[in-house]
Amino acid sequence: EIDDLFVDPFNGGILLSTEECKQRLKDSVRGSFHWDPKFLQPVTNREFLARIIRNLKSIYLRKRDHARALTMIEFALALDPNSASDRRDRGIIHYHLGNSAEALNDLQYYLESSPHGHDT
Image (cartoon, one colour):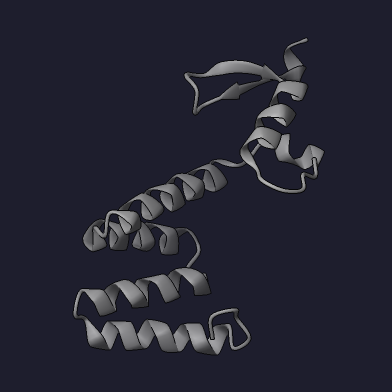
């Protein structure tokens, strides 16, 4: 039945059953595995775009391409202006780019927004 098929955008758009989705997730995680049917719920266009932006940000950060990473963070903040973690990341990038005032502003925002964060 078509309702039980899902498109895998990372593998050429192949169709997967629910069981195949479960198996792929299980194969990709290490340690304990907990399946939640919510994993297969549709996402909004905004959520989809946010995920693409996060993926690109991660790629650029791994490559130490700070200018492009900063662009992705700006896009993420356009979607969610109150994201403390994106403000933190933008502050760190500004620091690496030598933009001290911008870095300080973003990092202060992060500390005020997330005083009990794992990295504060």
